[in-house]
Length: 522
Image (cartoon, rainbow, N blue to C red; front, side, top):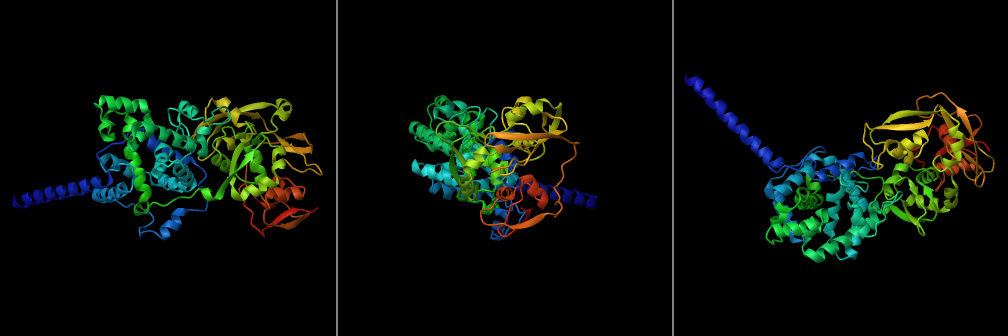
């Protein structure tokens, strides 16, 4: 019996010890505060998983970890509440915002620093693209630079982010509010997604709210829920004007807004301490610039001539909804990598005249009407964009959206799309002597404003990576500075498809100065 009692005592002691360890683990990694199951702040972060701009060999995380604070690459540091509270107190001493630490703030710090680390690494990378723009505008308006972190709470720095209630862009403007600040929205353009114009509008809106409340925490609450809801909360609280006193009277989503802002401010300042480093996008602020466009132009035209992915153009120019820059006013603005701008300027008229499947669709209607049409279902793959699907089937983005009754360009993996296209037929190009621009997989110019095309029947076969063609009758061209694959093809009387097939290239192949490229003998 004495032995049995000793065993019982040991079991109880071990059980109490394990419970103590569990409480320590929970207090350091979790919080008693539960975030909303459909928290829009978490949803904005999750949207970064679908962006393709991060498919690059430039990983800031690898560079950062090489010079980090000694953590293992997969380490997830966890700090006691007292440590985090001390850090936030230091930030508060240097900020016009009232930055405090409590369990609500801790819940969002856990989300950013523990639960959604991969998305946050992408978000930190995107800050290299957008924060310089935000800081310039905020400094010009003499506003706190910390307001740049508001865009993290609103959109996780995803310019295409759309909330379930219809707010759009980096600063999540609703349609009506955007109109008040002269952000144009029509079938082709949504300036709520324009990084420059929407940032200017956000600054003006926040200045207006500050003129009412004289408190930046209330400005944040009013930016999210509208000044009407903040004014109601003030009345219901008996006239109190402290955010934390008003919090119980604010809409549920707004109640988490200021805690998320404080958490985002903390994580961005102490990212390295949490072993968080940027996953870099293919473009950052110092590597992009803008040019003026004076004529209607499609992304497909730009991509084909500049030899760059359409997805990159879409991401850098989220204002344009249908992959088309329309003629509106004196000019429209196009954002491109700086490395591509000299080529664009030198070939601007050629780009305007370049004909693609999308730009020549109307001229091909008589041909396609004569072909047997068939409908099929396309299942969206991970990372696949609506413009890429449209190009695959030779249809327009507008058609895909119309057939499937989808309001935006955003797709989900596994989504089923109805596609109607010519059955077992494609329009192929006919090369012409002396042309200044050739067309890829569509038509080629025979004279200005005219095109020639033939229809070739084929058996549907799965697409494979192109293999180098026979080397008979070919010569070698050495790539010079400023060359693009399109320019080399044109100068040797070839199409992009021909030169890619000859060399085993694909649409993402990048040329290097000095590289040898096979071309047809002249």
